[in-house]
Amino acid sequence: MKAKPPKGRGATRQAINPFHKQHIEVVHEEGIDEPVEEASATQVIATHPKTILNRVDSPDIGHSYSLNPYQGCEHGCIYCYARNSHAYWGFNAGLDFEQKIMVKENAPELLVKAWQQPNWEVLPIMLAGNTDVYQPLERKYQLTRQLLQKMLDYRHPVGVITKNALMLRDKDILAQLAAHRLVHVAVSITSMQEEVRRAMEPRTATLAQRWRVVESLSALGIPVRVMIAPVIPGLTAHELPQLVERAAEAGAQAVSYLVVRLNGAVGPLFTDWLKAHWPHKASKILRQIADLHGGQLNDSRFGIRMKGEGPYSDMIQQLFKRAQKQFFPVNALPEYNCTQFIRPHGRQGVLF
Image (tube, rainbow, N blue to C red; front, side, top):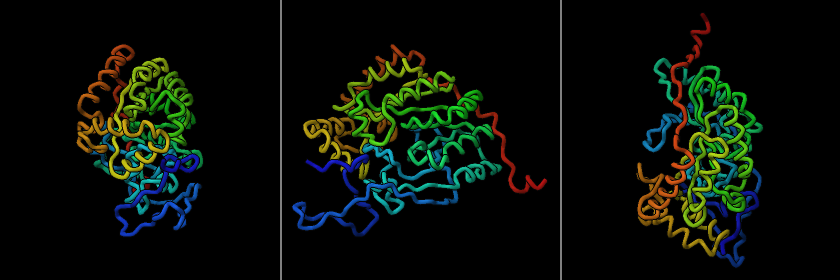
């Protein structure tokens, strides 16, 4: 059996950075070589990038830009595809992703600077895509709140997705954005089982807290989607109908799902995690995940990677469609209003 993760972390170990020529590992598990101790504390790395917006060209994603005020994520979700991107910064997809978090302190200023460009096209910006903008560090740095305030000040459409109840802190801004049809909120809920949530997403809000977010924001007229993601065969897939029904009870206006895909370093990390927490189910779950993706754990094909293919994918889709038809006959959020944008003045404009 593989070692369990350090307390409060998702990954059981560090991963190998494919861009590094050398790496350290334990050669003899018997103790002949001393294992490298992993610090459990989070390391914050302040950064000041030159740009903050990422153009999204994927046909699978409905937003044109993503904005990540943080790089890495303390939530520690073991299945997170964003783990792979940490290697580009000299870290790795394992514990580094959860413990070494880059904070982009000038994100709000860079956003306004981008809007000052005369050729800026008003299209929805997604917070975030490669991190969770309400991870624990947001309580201190408040970059997400500042960014939302900029969206409101300049009337720019924005989408937000999170697993953290800290979003309720910003319900005042979100409600004002909603009044102008400038915001969509997505709350990611993976399971109805707190045991699964605690193991799979160790530093996220509890399931009860996440349902409270859906209920509270929906009551304020803020359009909320419940994102059931990822659906994991043999572990959470059977819960789809129950999750859809619960989303309707909580007041969500829309619901959707994505199946698990384990690209790059996430595949081995997830495999180790699964063997540590559910050893008796691990082989079956991994086999069913591979059945969704043409016999592989990973899948990067546009149009297929999010839902999978084959008999097991069809079964998941039918489960979802049946529940959606019953509980979400109208399964959509209101369209963004992209006509209210107030372009900020550049330095020259301020002089006059």
